[in-house]
Structures are given as structure tokens and as C-alpha cells.
Length: 103
Image (cartoon, rainbow, N blue to C red; front, side):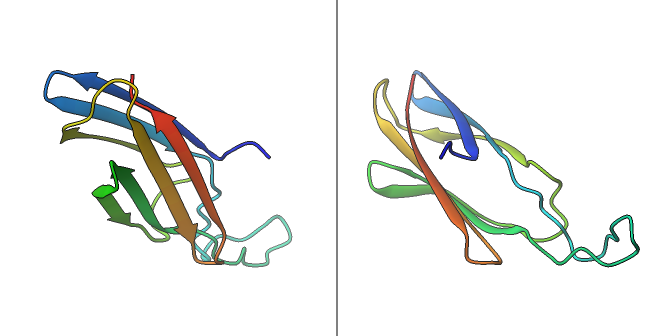
């Protein structure tokens, strides 16, 4: 199965810039479908980015984050070829993990 995560990480001197797009419905539980029934909540709760075994960013998300969320940040460290591990967990217990190489 293809990953729901797309990542681009670029090392620029002392910092690494990371951009990630996650395919996820991010349903809040407050929206109705075409028949008028509420769509149950289904959203990402935590996203983690790890480099060299260290947590570089952890985000706690909820139902207010839009569908297919995009995140961009930078951290100190990282070199070309190093692995960057991205993991998310949603409120239904589903998860996905991707290991990307820093370019």
C-alpha cells in the first residue's frame, strides 16, 4: 500500500527544511453527508518527525485541521542522505510511517 505521507527535506548549511503533505480526511464530526447524517470524527491526533533517533517536531492536531494537512518547518542539524522518520496516529488508532532521505 502506498504511504499517505509525502515528504521533502533539504539540508541547507546548518538547518534542514522539511515540507510534508499527509492525505487524510480530517473529518471533524460536525459535517453532514448528502443524506443529512453526521460524518463521524476521523482526524489525526499526533504527528512526529524524528532525525537520528531524536524527536525534532511533534504536533498535536484535532478536528480543526483541514483535509490533507500540509506542514513546513526547519530544524538544526541533518545532512544529505540522513533518514527522517514521519509518523502520524489518528483518533481511530490508524497510523502511517514513512522514512525519507534528506536531500
